[in-house]
Amino acid sequence: MLSTIRNCCYAAAMLLLVHPAADAMTLSVKCGGHGGLSSINAALRVLQAAGGGEPSTINVSGACRENILVQNIDRLTLNAVDGASITDASNGTAEVIDVAGSKGFTLNGFTVTTTCDATCLASGGYDVISCYFGSDCLLINNVVSGAGNGAGIGVYALSRVTVEGGSVRNNWAGLFANDNGEMFVLGTTIQGNSYGVYMNHGGNIAFRAGIDGVTPTTITQNAAQGIYTNIGSSLNVKGPASISNNGAEGIWLALGSDAFIGGGGPGPVTISGNGGPGVAVNDASVALFGNRAQVTGNGQTDVACNATTAVTHGVLTNIGGGLTNCPEGAPASDNVGLNSSFIMAGTGSSVMRAFILTDSADPGCFVTLNESNAAGAGETVFCGVRAPSLYGGRPGVMLTVFFQQPIPDGAVLWLNVRQNGARQYGPPVVCLTSDGC
Image (tube, rainbow, N blue to C red; front, side, top):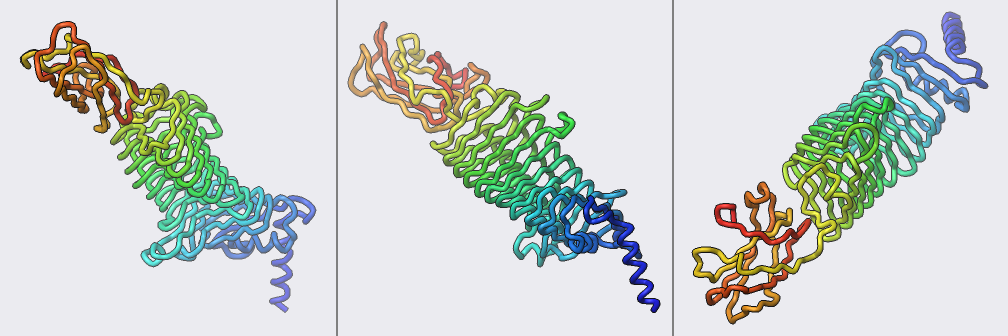
């Protein structure tokens, strides 16, 4: 009898926690509490029993230790109350929050943490939060961490995730977009992961300022690339944003990936202090730089074109003075004329030397004799990379021509010059040993 009374009272309590099924439902969960709903999964069972056709809200307090599957439940909101947290109960063998086939899912204000010991690290990867099978997820001001073999936040085929504020730390990948999954990131900090962002198989991520229009997205102190893209992925980074102090490249574009960097709200897109190039453009990839892109002070060339199929636009004008080997806008080669003013002193009037500014330090330079009014048998010509003091240490090619006899006054010599990665071919200038030639 007592059991029957208790069950009846519990059922009545459940009815008090919810509105009628025809209206929006609101449930309250106190994780670790006694009586009422003490887990998010228990609240989900109540919603599913009620049919789940209307918008539903679960307000959560306490420290929850569970793995949550939100499957085929539309318009569900989970709100954290007084700093509520959700911690993995599977030792990294399942997502902490798994959203499948659900539209309008919102997660607001939680600390969400997975655990992953040595056994977990040797197994398949699981995310902290995963959104897939046509789901639509909005994540607001959450702290997401701990997926040593997965992503903090992952989006997959036919799904979209919006991340507003919060932070994503200490995961294999902070953010992961795969199989044409889409993600919008607004004013979020992505720090201390192996990869800050990992995009594959057509993943699409756009970064913007926070909803206040001024809070930047920050991608920093990740062990490898700040952003890694591969196999047709699409990246859009608008200001204000910072991609800095990552262990390898700031942004890596490969195998048909594309990126637009710059523009947006007040403040630049700053890419600096990374261990490798700020932006590396690889096979069949495209990088477009808009206004307010600042790609400077990286460990190697600020924008590196690593393949002849790499394409850039705006790299010569819109990266804030950073160094690049990308040949955008430069002719493939140049025809250079030298005269007797380039004869080196102390060589018996038999050597000409000149420097041409190219802004490329690539050692692959090629030079051939063209024509001359003082041609003779046995002339030889050499080219080499130099960075003389003439242009404040900016690089280019030094050309040296050896004649077999003294060069007559009025002599003119034309050369064909080409250098890999040349951004320009400046006019030839006299360059002495004391200048660095």
